[in-house]
Amino acid sequence: MKTKNIDFIAAPVPPHFVGNAFRVHNFIPGIPRLDMKSMDPFIMLDYNSKFNFPPTDSPRGVGVHPHKGFETVTIAYQGKVAHHDSSGGGGVIGEGEVQWMTAGNGILHKEYHDEEWSKKGGDFQMVQLWVNLPKKDKSTPPKYQALTTDNIKKVELDNKAGTVELIAGEYKGTKGAATTFSPIHMMNAKLNKGGKADFNFPAHFTTTLLVIEGSIKVNGKEEIPTDHLALMDRKGEEFQLEATEDAIVLVLSGEPLNEPIAAHGPFVMNTRDELVEAFQDFNEGKFGYLE
Ligand code: MN
Image 1 (cartoon, rainbow, N blue to C red):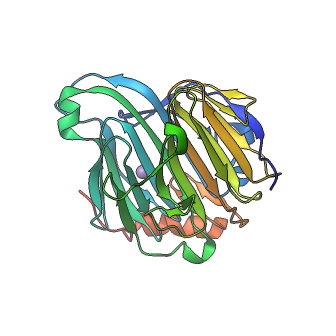
Image 2 (cartoon, protein in one colour; image 1 turned 90 degrees about the horizontal axis):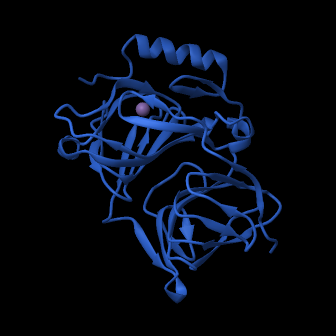
């Protein structure tokens, strides 16, 4: 086994608002080195770094909009996110929980701050990741998976180093609850200061780390500060994280699909013709109905 090292560390770009609820730094594909092809199968990553929203009686959010051809994965770190979609999926997630929505052949949804949470307001922090679907699965029916504290597997690390909370894929023999259409590992490493965790993913997988809290050292060398993303190289399999202060790190590793990407706004297909068709289907109301 060879060591996997850092290829590139990205600082967060200035944030923009999605609707009035999500103040995000766009890492993928906004940063040139982190384009859709390089990050395959991860085609978009928006990170709402910790931001305080004052109390309100009308929850902030993003109104009804379509998606087709991929999956949206929303991970809440602080605050609560509510979701409703045209296939009947929906729910509210809180700290450490995940909404995994398969847009598949076309869906409408809306994303809001939870109503009760909004009344109190407070610090809000989340990630929205788009995972591309293989060509053969782009027309799969829409689906919604709620990954909550009930089904997120916790792997306790040796030496009281901390915990790995597994969303999808595998960590040291434990399997995550989310079903995926291509091989993907997704987990939050919650490390105590000085705590170490080892990871092992195939060399050719796209592997990336986002530091949500604290800071970490990779392979005892380079340090990644809070709110920074590290893209790992494809030369080795193994790496080690060490928390230089209490830390939470989102660890992602996925097998590239290596298929053509034709993306525009909320649709990600393989060809331009399929994109045109997606817009037509949406305009003709084929994605269902959502109030
Ligand atoms: Mn959306």
